[in-house]
Image 1 (cartoon, chains in turn yellow, cyan):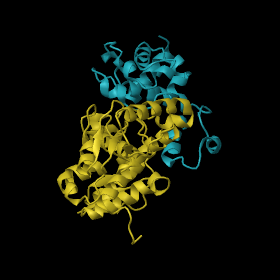
Image 2 (cartoon, rainbow over the protein chains, first blue to last red):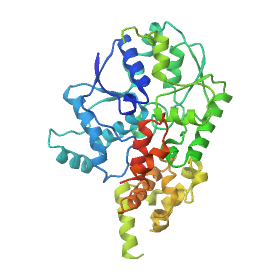
Image 3 (cartoon, rainbow over the protein chains, first blue to last red):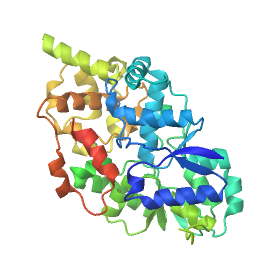
Image 4 (cartoon, chains in turn purple, blue):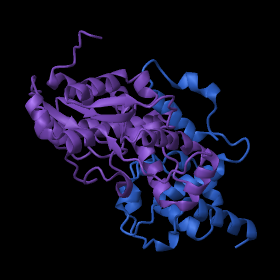
Length: 261
Length: 130
């Protein structure tokens, strides 16, 4: 099975492990991720204003490239996923916006036809957690706290990944990998996000609340799909490891160390 | 309401796609807002200040840059008012004015370290700069 793949800017730089372990684990599970050529950064956050067009064109180009290859698109980074998915939703549902984009792009019309999977959805809905469970060689054996943050789940009308208030998609993966999933109150609350840039105090407070909540529930490790969540938690005095969920997956599947690379 | 106030109100309603009249004043948006303590004007105030055309104080307020765009208020509003989209539209009206960028490229080196993900820098630019 082949899918178009959009890693995004951070996965080529500060979050290389999120990317590398995603590809390696997918290969192990029989899925090839074909990187979109010449992609551009999604911009990190989706601008909800209806008259913002230029800021959304890079996402439309990525979606159109996947469509040309007649492939569904896979994302891993929570931010990329949120931006690309919200842009695609606008292309489907906001005719005025889609019209402006299509007139600008001077190619075949695009109206949001590409199907988008977050890597977690690829694992759950395409590969299946049962198959993943059978492929585990190193069961995790730890108490793992899934940290969703905000970008994976909201706005739910667009993201449609899971129940936004009581998600299970990461917990079910943790269980399939032989870990114990820890449920805690702040798993779907914001880490402080981009505000870290201007107000590290505010971002720090938000992240500390998440960390305390996870630790109180007995977490030994926190998993995330978002480089900014990871950074914010680590900069806010987190004294348990914060790892990308693809790293946890690669470890369990026995492909974390690859002698070919 | 003066013509300039009316025009600004129409612009915010048009670009946000939000109808503030749907609000039933339950306050759930502000109750769930993770940045509530840091805001001068809270999400529910954005809704009724836009509804009444009293937008100038919002344009001047740091509250615009405290909204984390976490969409908690959007998902938890029982009337689908989507307050975060109003905050976004007012913020854009503020930074689209010439000379009103909140951050420039020259500010960045002092604000980052060796681990700063690119995602943080590009997101901040989306929020602070036009």
